[in-house]
Figure: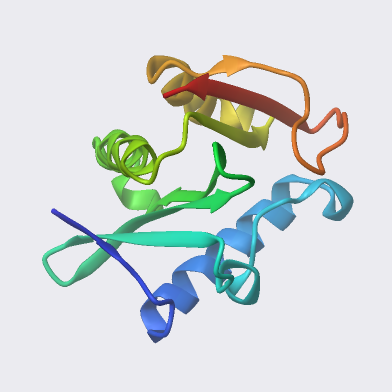
Length: 151
């Protein structure tokens, strides 16, 4: 598998992210959905990676710079047929390594509190993320769980 920075210009990643947005909308009320669309991800403060298995896009993830020391994990997604195959762990390890290399000392994230998101929360716990209060512009929300870790 190969993890590479993606400029978000290809049709395959656009479709992959659209599927992600549609899935999040089906699970979470619109006012509690924080997944970014293509335009939201095409910001200078965001670094986006795609995970390829040969010619097949199997996952993606990003970090958003919040300030000089703090970044947020965004857009973690694994192709549904490839879930629980180690892709998310491989990508999260890559993101943590890259965040350190970029000079960040803290990584935080928002994920869902619904049972659907339990595997994601378990993954983040496995990588040392602890539950925390809302950060950046987030507010308390019964549909959100907030997590953070030092690097």
